[in-house]
Length: 415
Ligand SMILES: *Cc1c(COP(=O)(O)O)cnc(C)c1O
Image (cartoon, rainbow, N blue to C red; front, side):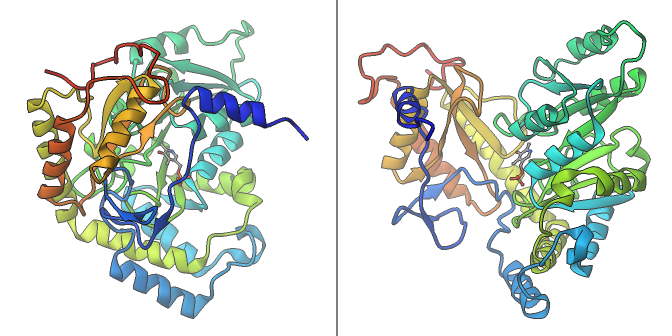
């Protein structure tokens, strides 16, 4: 057997050992975690739909009617009318010809990139992209080139200097980016990327896992935020990924685009073909959640109100915020110890915000990833701010109190 104990020890020594927290009961802003009720600011249930009574009821009814397991992959005998109905609704929602359901966003990204790119092609990826996009690129065997975060000038130079082969046959080029960056909350410069892709005849793929449901008056995501939703923009952003386990509150993911794209993915996306279809009842529940997300814009409005309240409060406390208009509001700690220390301090005060450490975020940018939900109240945000005001400035911890931790980027706690 491969020796794992030393590997685990190294993770512990570096403060990078990860442990799961045990949740009981529904996902909520006050979940019961490890037997204790905490006020949580770290889930992606941005609209508060994960335990919505109507969604629960839709799941119950769907299961009573269609059973639980789908029994097979979509291409064998698992493709159910509940899946088809959800795909139609999703395509409609984001203004694309068709949509294709995947079991998870992780699998959607692997499947799409692997299906569309191969050796000889190039993938140009933002440095802060989600891990699944990176893994998809590696799986495809295309050449992966990462550009500095949101740096369209650099990307342009990379596209122009692009071939590397010198034979004039440079293969296809896919630009891939998060729409909303999952750990930073800022938006990709989508209009510029679309223009650049158009000029250089590259293809643009947006993973809008954190934009769908949240951004835009109708919740259509980052593209709506930039006024790029609607069928006429399908050529500008031909490949759109959305996930369903975040703002939509259920589980799964989709790819939306032209009929031809979807048709091709059904033929070639391995993580679509070689896996069991989602339970149909889950598709039925998701359809209900999607309906609520569209019909109750007040959820988005309340969320935006909470975001402003948090940002205004944090600024007056001198906390260093990132440039994020979304419910993801990270506080950069810098080193791992400080992030863990802050997280522990909050927890001691009844608030749950998990510390995010490398390799999820770059070295030296460990952080508290604070997320807000429409299910939070003003008083919840105020309580978070009051606790953050008392956040210890010291970076020393019981675990490595001897090590002088480097000064945090953005200094986190201010004054
Ligand atoms: C969460 C996330 C995914 C993965 O989606 P799952 O459905 O959770 O597998 C993909 N991309 C981004 C940007 C994400 O934040």
